Image (cartoon, rainbow, N blue to C red; front, side, top):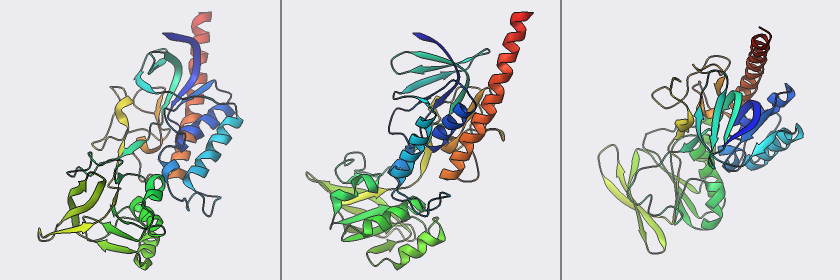
Length: 319
């Protein structure tokens, strides 16, 4: 079923990039709709604390997302809580198909689908998801108070969540496959100074061991000499990377080898009127402030594109 409403712009995804795009689209007097299948805010909503977003010395990730959402709603942005299953580019307009079969049409589409956490691909990972294996410390850390846990990864998220868990658990093993972290220096300094964190460099997890009640430990292997070891833990928090959600990107749009969409400086893809923003777009770094900037840029560019399209349509009608 195709709805009769023709939107100026359809925004797919409700993270910082999508919500910012919605704000700027409404400020440009565009008829816009934002579609988000989950909790608005994306990955930021499950971030422990944000210390690098301008204007906030420190703010919880979920709280920051709420402020984004409140701001977008203040412009009367239409928000639909449902899933998008496909994007169909067209000549005169583009289509977005929802999970119930409804097809929305719009002059422009802004893809802000973000990404998802990568899996460790270790034995016992899938079987113990929700039984000691987690990808969100702020979501599940409460269940491991005063227990021994492990955090796997070496980026900012791993370091942030290890610090968070160190405050509520008995001990945190921070396991990284390399001999140094990739995370920011300030986070590394905090980790080094935290007595409840024990760092295991050059180590990988070969198996997540469990019994009927859930995770009981980790079988480890050194990347230096293949030496094996075992530690007892009741929780495992995995932060080993991020994959862009590029499934909705239509054919004809360039995607790099890592799955990120290649755009121009306006965040426009190879297909006119289709934009990619936030963690879905190839750029130097993935930060909240950069995602918001993408949303702003794409919305302004979409507004110009839509106005151009409307002028062309009027000229066709008058010809």
